[in-house]
Amino acid sequence: QVQLVESGGGLVQPGGSLRLSCAASGFTLDYYAIGWFRQAPGKEREGVLCISSSEGSTYYADSVKGRFAFSRDNAKNTVYLQMNSLKAEDTAVYYCAAASRSGYGCYNRWEYDYWGQGTQVTVSS
Image 1 (cartoon, rainbow, N blue to C red):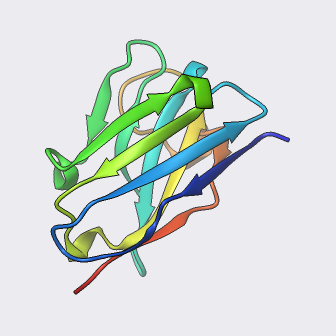
Image 2: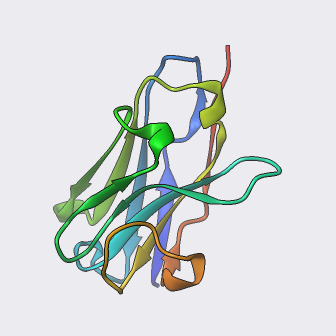
Image 3: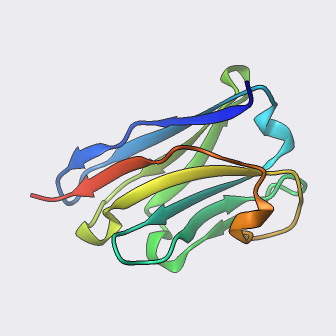
């Protein structure tokens, strides 16, 4: 079965850290461009960190630069989003996505072949 499964969300205090995981089955993540998106209540889904499949360049939304980082474990076919210095405005449902196309930046939603189910991140004291 081809799918992306996310985990690692939860409740964290401002200034804290979380690491989200996105595990793939049925296909090899290393061959795909990866996007991490989030959607807060009443807002559109936004791309926060996106990795191209070809040159491996990374796009960061201005709001997360210096705080969020990407990593991968090819042996586990899993990618990660490390989130540090979390703020209340980071509260959202976070999604990972994989696209077979290439190019810098986050793509339109319909350009991603696979999406995870989403995981809730809540930053609150």
